[in-house]
Image (cartoon, rainbow, N blue to C red; front, top):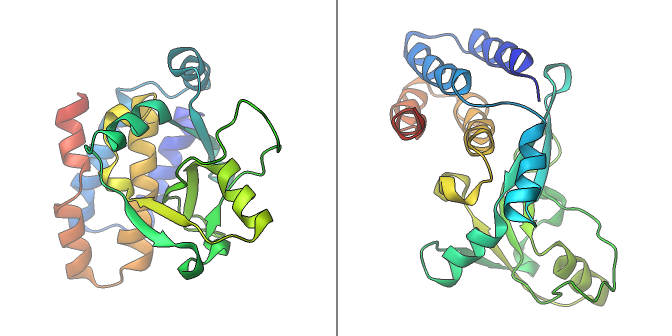
Length: 208
């Protein structure tokens, strides 16, 4: 969690995708990160504030290791009160190799083994999604060879309140959007449209 390295990553990504239409986009991203905290202490504070956050590490190699802290308790509250809608898929139709998940210890009496299995976007060279809640349930079903449902929450639909800090909110958004705009999409006109519609410009007003 190093702001200087993060800015080097942003500069590197911009230089690889330098166009007139990307300048304002990257300027907005850098403006946000320049005005919010980027430090290891954010995850420590998340543990104190939310008691049981889910922290997902994201490795940028030479540009550093970063933490995305999800406020799972609040996320589940919004889901239970129909303020967030999930897309549900049968496990038989899901490629588990594309989902990053932790391997938790089993038979912990304090753990709910029947919770929803919730995944969101987490695009790396090895996977496309990560389980942010329900790791224990996921492993239980795999062990018992049962059919089950996986609930998908798109990254762009996760509100600020479901992250423990603003860094996590913005960082999780950009790593997925960078992939969609600069790696998956090759058509320049489509890239322009995606940037025009980016949530980043809303975040500038929301956070600053």
